[in-house]
Amino acid sequence: MKWDILKVEDLYQGFFKLCRLRLSHGRFAGGEPLVVERELIRRGPAAAVLPYDPDTDRVLLVEQFRVGAIESPHGPWLMETIAGLIEPGERAEDVARREALEEADCSLGELVLAHEYFSTPGSSDERISVYVGQADLSAARSGIHGLVDEGEEIRTHVLPADEAFDWLDRQQVDTAFPIIALQWLRLNREMLQERWGSG
Image (cartoon, rainbow, N blue to C red):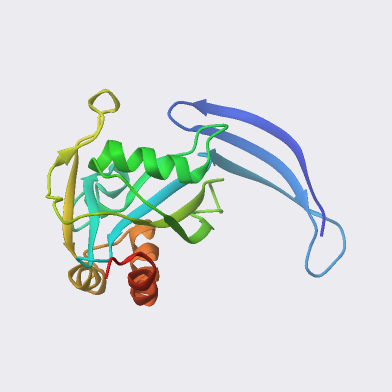
């Protein structure tokens, strides 16, 4: 089916951009195209990564304040994977590596793509690449990281994979990035241990 953008109106430009689009698109039932107006948050692509150490069977999660969760019954500090926005000209893998250093002082080896998806396509153009990254977490400890000039205060949590899966099952992890990454790891942990493990 066909679709056309008829008009674009910029409504707001801040950390993100908000536009109003007038567009037309074909109908499943056929006939005249449907003409609609929709607001679109221009967020752009992002990359997320879950560091995993196959030798110690541990993962690294980060915890930080999120304004979108201020009305959550659990509070606005969320358990997440490392993540960052992809700037023009950057590769998702490079962003995952950069953000791992900035947010957790963690160097990554091989990255495996777990999934790519649109986060909220009803209102945003954000597309996420989620990775699991090879990491040596044998000496890693929880700590505070992030870029002060970007208003970041990020606490890292290094924990056994089974404990992270338990957090997931008890809904202590309730954002899409880590849910997808941890579910993928639960299904593929043995493969990664064979591929990345030292012994």
